[in-house]
Image 1 (cartoon, each protein chain N blue to C red):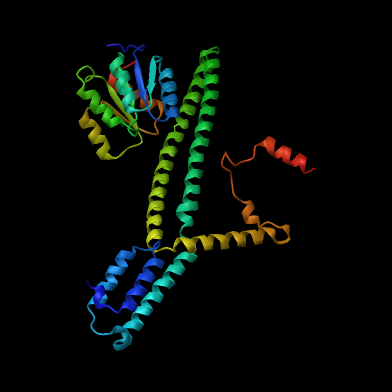
Image 2: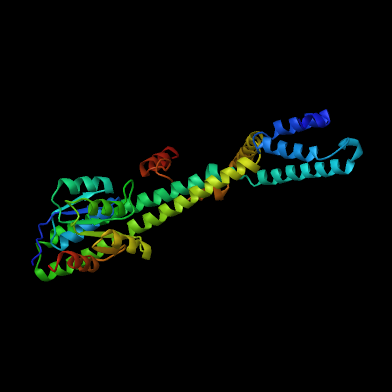
Length: 128
Length: 225
């Protein structure tokens, strides 16, 4: 199965700089159709309104965290299958376990490099 | 009820002490404890048991001495000045690194755009270098989060110190007096022979709202001839 590089991707992070970094790294990997949100609530609204094929989200945000966003996504019948990657500095085992139990598809710990991002993307959406 | 059993003069003194310490400690609690203590005694405690009176006065002196010691280390400066200054400095660090990171990324994006017009081999080299820049820029997010944690911890300390000062620190009048004294000391040092203590000059980077711009410094130097 080939990966559609025109797929719409939502990047969620309260640090604009991090959004910019992920956006640029995705661009280098050939993904140009990237939108952004700076907290869980606005991300959820965007996800419900748009036809996103992947969500890459930070965990530690206010008022809605990435973890709450993940749970909302999995509870929404229209979004429940959406590939979801958590990109966060929260590296404790209990975080990873909780995210996995909530239905995350992959988990990237900050700081990360382009190779890690690519490897996790391949693991979630297939080789490209 | 209990008060009726106590010497009226002592009651008057307790009222007086209570009024004096209103800002420093929970006076009702102190009063309740003392009244409870006194209610357990019998007879005229002023005349019949001078030892008890003596001990109470020693206790009172000890409390006063402790309050004076706490006042001397100026604990109110911690929540009023030191911690707010520290948190402001840390916020400035976050802001400065964010500005610098965005500037680095802008430069990398410009190079990336130019790289599209060079040979494949050169484009690959540039692409790898740019990727490294993007990866390295993520330090800002991590340091920002760490600094936020430190700011949170400092605010927690600030609250706890505030509580301790409210309970055991000097009363408002004493604090005002100490503040005036300190300002007078500072004025005296700065005023003596027109010399300024060099320590006062070594303040490190200034916050943006109080820092002089290069233009302001140039103007100042020009004014001074």
